[in-house]
Structure formats: C-alpha cells, structure tokens
Image (cartoon, rainbow, N blue to C red; front, side):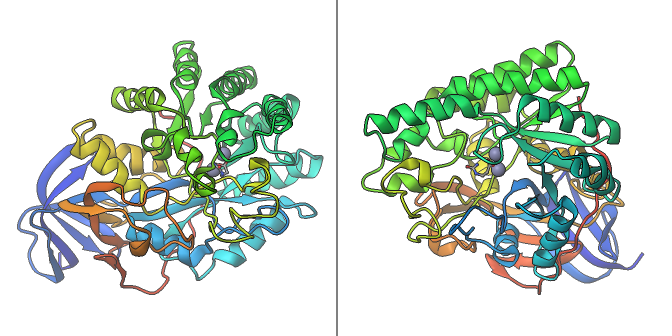
Length: 466
Ligand code: URP
Ligand code: ZN
Ligand code: ZN
C-alpha cells in the first residue's frame, strides 16, 4: 500500500503495551503497524519520540452560559487550539440548557458556536438542569438516539442542583435509553449552611471557598449519587473526584457490584487549598469545585491512580479571565468568595502534568497514561474503536511526545483565552511536540499548522468498562 504518511522510529504505545514499529496512515486512518512499510507521500522521523493516542479530554467547559455578566474565557477556536497544542485530538464540552430554551434548542445553539471553529474533533455531553416532561420524555430520548449519549447532572450550584427525585428521573431515562450519567457530587444544602456561617463571621476571602466545601460535602454526595444509581439500576460516572474518602465510597460500591466510574483531574494531584490563600485576591485563580485539598488527599488520589481505581483523567477546563469583571473579578467577588466564578483553565496542561508527574516519575506506565487520557474516554463515552487508541482501522489521531523536553509551564506559551494558568512556573519533563488529527499535523512545536478542521462526532452508547 502507498501510505499518505508514515511515522518512523517512534516508541508506539498501543492497547497491548509498547512496541518499536512504524505507523502507516492512509485516508486519515491508521492503515498499518509494522516495519518496512515502503514509500509514502510524507515520512515523519520520530526517532527519540513516543507515539501516544491523541488525548481525549472528556470534561471541558467551553463558551458555556455562566450567569449574568460572566463570560467564559474561551470560545471553541481558542479552547481547541489550546487543546491541540496540549496533545489532544478530541474534546468533549457540555451543552447547557439555558433558561427559556429547550434542550434541543440548546444543542442547536451550541453547534452554531462550534461549527467550523474547531482545531480538534469535538463531541458534546448534555447538562440536564430541568426534568420537565418535554426534556425527560421527548428531547432527551431523541438526543440520545442522535448520539448525545452522556449527560452531567449537578448536586450543587443554585439553579443547577437537582433534587434526589429529579436525579432518579434522569437516571431512569439513562437506563431506558442506554446513556451515561456523570455526576458532580457535592451537597448543596451543606455548602449553603457553611457559606452562610462563614460570611456571618466575616470569612469571605477565596480560601473560604475551600473551607465551605470540605471533604464530607463531597463524600456524602458521592455516596448518595452512587446509592441513587444503584436504586435506578444504572452505571454512573463520578466526575472530578478530589479526595480519598470519596474514592473509598466508589471502591466500596464497586465491591457491591455497582458499576461506578471515577474521574480525577490535575488540580487534585498538584494544587492545595493553600493556593486559595495566596496574597491579595490571587487565591481566586484557584477557585474551582470541588476545591483542591491538601497533600494527604493528593497522596490518596495518586494511590488511586497507581492502583488503577480511576478510569479517567480529565482537565475540567472551565476558564475565566482573572483581571476581568466578566471573570474572577466579578461584581462582589472581592466582598465574598460566593461571587467568584468557579473553574480553572487546564485544557493544554492536563497531559504534560500527568506525563511528567506520573510517567516520568515512575508512578504509571505509558499504557496506563494512554488509558487514563484517551482510551477509556473513548470507550466509556461511545467513541471507540474509532478514537482513543493507536490501532489499525482507528482514526490517525497520534501525538508525538519528546520525553526529554523540560519546561516551566507559563501563561506566555499557552493558547487558551484565559489570562493566567494555575500552574505558572510548574516544572515538567516531557511535552507533546506534534499533534496529528486524522493524519494531518495540526500543531507542531507549539504552533498551529492547520486551519480549523475539527469535526463533530456523534457517539454510540457507553461501553461499560468494569
Ligand atoms: O469549578 C468548576 N469545576 N467549574 C466547572 C463546572 C463544574 O462543576 O465542573
Ligand atoms: Zn462539576
Ligand atoms: Zn466541570
């Protein structure tokens, strides 16, 4: 076969481990894995580099409605440019049904924002905030059928949090139509109780965002979400797990036979609540939910990653600008942490942080890195076997990593729309030097090399991994 592109001499990470072979690409797909693949239109010499499946970030927020006067820092162009430069080839943002719109209208509107703008492939999860008969009985089944096979629900945030009976309704719909429910597990009543008390005592600085969302707030909600899923008889994914007690709930449920999947994020292995206590208003840069904890909890999350308890490592990219009244410096944010928009940027730094802290420090293998950052995302959210692995027949979504490249993460080098990174100065070893999307190089040495050629990916039902 005359290949369009051959990648030669890389250490290739496949589903069955690592191998030294060449990768032959034809018509945007991986056509051949082997040696002596013959001539090709383009030959990429990847000597000294590692070929990994393109990252899939299945938890990102892009251009999501965020309340009056608040605007996310990224549109689809800037977020996906940043994703590509961080070694990703697919991202999965959330389509939120804003007040006054049906879920189907929200999806159409979200497509209008994304279409033609994306530098990597995209696929949308839904956010369910209404459980009226039209949403649950008509729109949701139609959208699942059309390939929107996963949705996030919230147990916190005023206006978004669902009651237990609403959660059961959503889970029941997921069971009937074979979709995946992703849960943000924090107890809203407990947070409101603690927040009101903190404010009454004048405890209003960003640090109190973390103090009013302590571990039991997440542990209780995790237990409740899993119990509700058990009652409804559906698998469930607990997103952005931040601590060992919540992970213990997940592991206990798995021992009972419940299919619970677990996601964690860079912030829970690298940041702590002390970051929210930085001088002046700097702590606002680290306000996200659940909040970063302490080094003991970081160690508990690492232990879970090393044991294989976590299925997914995502960014929860949710970017706001710092020096901006439409971002972290929103009206009232300096008067109380309750008014600081929740979320941090991280779409470009997720993979280098796990590569450096996990692979290069000997905590996880390259195969485990591939599962946590691509393969499991594709399988759990219905994109496999087309996405998530270097395998014959799959899309040629391949990222070449230089494991010797050392860097200090810096806002100056990133491509997102935010004006800061929570990881400013964080030292990493290893960086993605070439991102190949369906056979075309979209980013090389931190520079975008292709026009916006990302496509939308409808999805199949989830593949239940346990
Ligand atoms: O603080 C966060 N994580 N904001 C993004 C929305 C969410 O809850 O994931
Ligand atoms: Zn969340
Ligand atoms: Zn999120």
